[in-house]
Image (cartoon, rainbow, N blue to C red; front, side, top):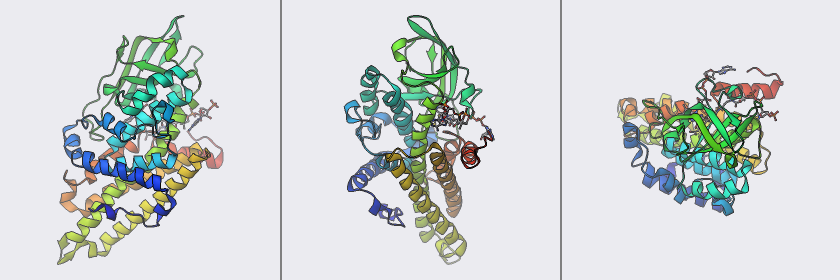
Length: 389
Ligand code: TGC
Ligand code: FAD
């Protein structure tokens, strides 16, 4: 479909700056040339796109809001959102790679790290020379990370780390992992674990039907000696990892609009070309209802994200506001992926079209970074003041 058919039904572009539009265009061009032609094969074969992280580094998609002195671009939150949107138009795996590196690895090092840690890791993470992963979830504790069992002990000249993390994006590829574990007082703290440390392994999780162009695995710590300088010194408690999630969830709210746009544009074009009963299927009311509802939902999601981005730029976005956007927009996108697949009939199940891939990917997106139900409970708590977890 022509890029000019990408919807801007409420003229939201008028609210963006020239810089925003340039950034969006450059990422859009890269996705068109690097991701779109290769993603079906990667997903079908369960392989990642070659040199993905370095390519993302080259286009400035890693840590775009990290200060320039540490290798970032010092961009605002709307720019970050637009980058995520364009990447996920290509595939959620590509957005996931950028989300984890930016919001879950660079963000905590920038916010909670020492000056030495920032200088050592951030520039290499920004260029994609180094790949990071983020370990919060454990085999026995997903939605409830405060019950985590991974722990570390102070051994005088180093920490001794034991435990395991599960479902970790890019674990098999990572050079470093920002992981969250309990200290001897039971308080959560962040540690930077490096590949090569004895006792640290990263087994891959095979046979996923979702995010097939992204690697997922475990982080296993068996008496790992972590140097003391690898502790993130400036945060203690669950608010450390949860602050990272605020940033990643915000990016996902934008990202999934991209997946929805890809499905919508494909469905519009197909419905005008495919004829049944002597006329284009886009001429039947039932198909028009679907297309009209897709456009309505995409437009609402765009407006939600733009205002959330404004709040975020002013440091006023609350975690509950971010939860609302993540929950609403992911559901919007997964519904559009599923319904638009039907518009293509049998062709909708084929790899030549993006719907099945997006729909399958979004099954992970609706689960990770807080499940659909967890985000509803966060909104419920914000309304009533009563914790229903
Ligand atoms: P609770 O007692 O409410 O809070 C504990 C402390 O944390 C503070 N806090 C937050 N701080 C910053 N941002 C937030 N969003 C925060 N939410 C809470 C809170 O103020 C408190 O601070 P303090 O100073 O009083 O100690 O915590 P809880 O144990 O009741 O849990 C709350 C709950 C359920 C909402 C939270 O744990 C949660 O969000 N669970 C979902 C877990 C989750 O989202 N995991 C994601 C793992 S990472 C991932 O999925 C990456 S996918 C990457 C990809 O490929 O894109
Ligand atoms: P559970 O917490 O066991 O939840 C199971 C079901 O119970 C869900 O439907 C949930 O909504 C529901 N439920 C739970 N508690 C309640 C409640 N109180 N009330 C009502 N219902 C409830 N994690 C990381 O740390 N780093 C990563 O990089 C990462 N990448 C991921 C990549 C992929 C592809 C996937 C699938 C997951 C990834 N995750 C990652 C883990 C992800 O964050 C967790 O899967 C998610 O938080 C849910 O945890 P769980 O799978 O243990 O489900």
